[in-house]
Length: 312
Length: 271
Image (tube, rainbow over all chains, first blue to last red; front, side, top):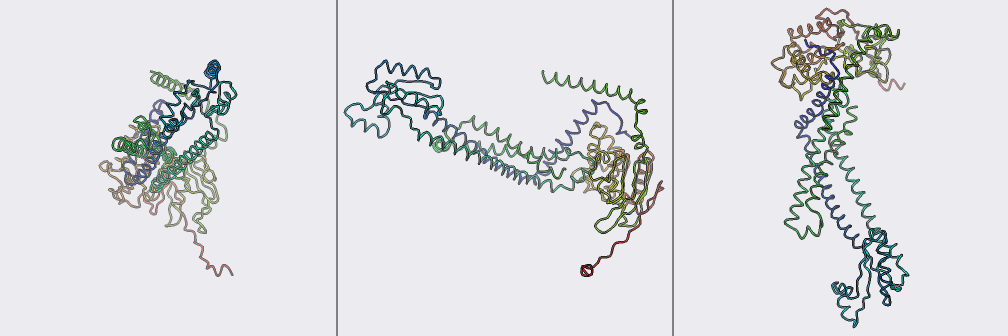
């Protein structure tokens, strides 16, 4: 009879340990997953739905980020109105001072004619401009500030300059900016709460599904504990099952999100541009990769914590 | 390139550690004999299994009381008694599945009577339990049941050795042909023989068999008892709980059926 207790070299024992761990955890987990597929289906469905929601939220988030970036770009433009009696030297001095400011990205001179042409292109303003006998717009400097948060400081720095109109120096409206900032913080906070809530619900649903599967096999778990199985031998296959379920749920969710995106982009492009502006194929690819990874992570974590009491 | 270099370095490190480890073992062995402390020497000379004044009750029902015995490696011990006398309870106490209410249980130097069981995994790894209801894993076939048990108890043994050992164990119980069958496809006797093969393939130092021949016909029962006797001859301590003494044990522990306390009506207890 083969002596199973014979002393073997360390390298042989290490390799054997790794090989047996692979068989006991990975292969056994995949085999259990395949055998329990019918029992796993509800967990798979729940995970797919939650990940689909996450994926759609992700694309909406990308669209919101694009919109916020556009808004920030337009909000960071500050018009400095020039005084009607400002000399060209004063204007040149102000231009060079602003251009040298590290907070400023660029400065462009807008002549009264250009200001009038821009006003004519805006609905309503064109008619008003036509009613006036002379050009009502003065010249201005269009200052593009690097950060929206610096717009107020730049506006304050130009007030009192001899080249600037003393009655209305800039287009900066502190109330409007404060409102915009509050809106961004509010939307971000609500988004964060929603993401945390979704993560908690996903974990709870998946952990309960895995715990249900483990409870159905508690006799087997009790037996393998009596067969001197280590904790990792009991929990490992469940984690592999969780990862496999999560990967499949992530794949299904990614396929559904990609299908939805393709449908909106190709069939209802007008709706798509209104609902998800700036969401391209690259964003969908990243979203799909995140969904598959999140599914695997969710499956692993919920399985590891879901069976910890049974395996202990 | 970096991975290959890391793997080669790791391999080299393993070989060095292995060589150093074996070298020190060789050098240490004669010294170690002299350096063993008196406490450790006493523990090594102690019988593998020692129970003293053990009491176990389930509620008010006392199953075992004032039970004391000891047994060493190579002993074949029979535990006899009527149904409900506490044979299975005794085996579960030895296996660490239960804790005694009073008294002491020492297995291989490990105190299993303590609240916090230290070294219970080692005790279980070195012992095999043949359950009365065989308890095979239903999703695995006969061969896989034996292999998985071996892998769990001895993960550092190469898979090829484990597989050959499992084949041998099934051959020893006459189940070579049925190794691919699942427990549901096997008869009660065949399942019990798989359970016996699963335990004996581990070559444990302590074998606990809870009525291993209860569901077997005469021929198979004889074969299983022979295997258990061989295990004892090979140096294992074998404890068999049985109704019928069909073999020659070195020691017989006869458990009396302790009286069940009469149920007192709640009305009388209040008075």
